[in-house]
Image (cartoon, rainbow, N blue to C red; front, top):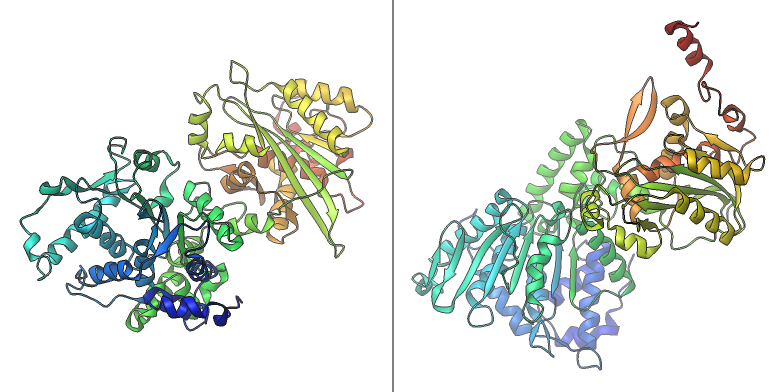
Length: 608
């Protein structure tokens, strides 16, 4: 549990005694249950208040500007209730963070990027509408303001934009804005103030881009569905000289851990914990801290902050329980965790490795020098990647059997039309992966993979770390050149196993990898290529045995195939058994087949 010492911050607590401070104190002093990331956000706010006026910290917090935003939001009638409702504490906190903090150098917004996330049905649309309307009606500069509401599809953005229009129509009926009625023109596409050349407009990635827009405020709804940053970048790229510009991402978590929002979430979560989050990024994520909290209703306020309102707590608890039971009965617990608990999941049906198990496996470093390893190889076909995999068995400090896994992939670009196109199609940032040392992008003019290059890289890697190679496992398809080089180097020294690619041969190592990920016995580095492959892989079954597969053609699982090939022999490292003998005769057409398979072959095929 995070400890908070009020006495260390008593001066700023007294000086900045506003709604935001009240929320922070309620959270940090455990009067209001909150998740780890929100506790860290609250602590960050108080610590930043202490920094005001110190060298190198060019930001200030204005309680009056924060209060102005709260006053505006409070008079907007709730669209569903058709009346003004009191603001919840968490809503006041959000508004105060976005509007209260300013950059003293530019006199503009401090937070250029806002990541705002919580479970569904917690008023995200209402918050987004209030922020958009405030900047549209009262924002800066005085003229030529451009407010953008954007999402993935026309249908998705229609919901936010229509809510904003309805909120405006309700607001103009109040005494405070009645005189604005003749100033604002609105239709199904945009709202406009002609006298100041200002508009609030909806966009979707199905329609036009934001290349010609210079938005002072961009609100992007349901960002978890974006496969790349291209569309969002089309809005933000035009605002580099606008000190007032900000991008607000407002979304629940998602079911695809390969998307940019998931990368942002991981980076921001780590940074806010280490106190290294950029001064210009506001990260507010209400979520459950653990998946099993799905069965602890008393904790649900962590992802459903609207539960701080007693009447909403009753409604939400009842509704969420019903939804949970329905999804559990249908075998869709991951979907419930995403939508109602705001937990990122690898929610594909029959997913091979759960996202939580992948995250649990990541460690900052591992010493690969001078220890045994098992190598797996999977060669590319057309647009597939070529992957080498290394499995390192080791004992932890408690003498438990563990496996560290490491991969390197070679990325062809021939059919994709370039690395940018392939990165977008595969939802993997290969250029970043190459910089991090986990991939090599094809550099020849044909955009193909040179197996000589792969072999030379492998030999240099083995030599650099003085690896004790115990066995090579490989799929024979398209590997004849590589295998000839391999056998020439390691003949009679290291077993080279041509592993039959069928359920009877691969089911056991496939299950072994899955079980050991779940049990926490497999460790890996923060490798985006491997994380994507593990997330892409799904299970298929045949004759009570399992294999990995993928749901879409573009989903890459080549490195996981190589992992299973390496683990075919590696899983037996701590035993007295071996798969070497059964794979020694690679010229045997029945290599890797059981006696039952061989008998079946002769019964069903004519023999001369």
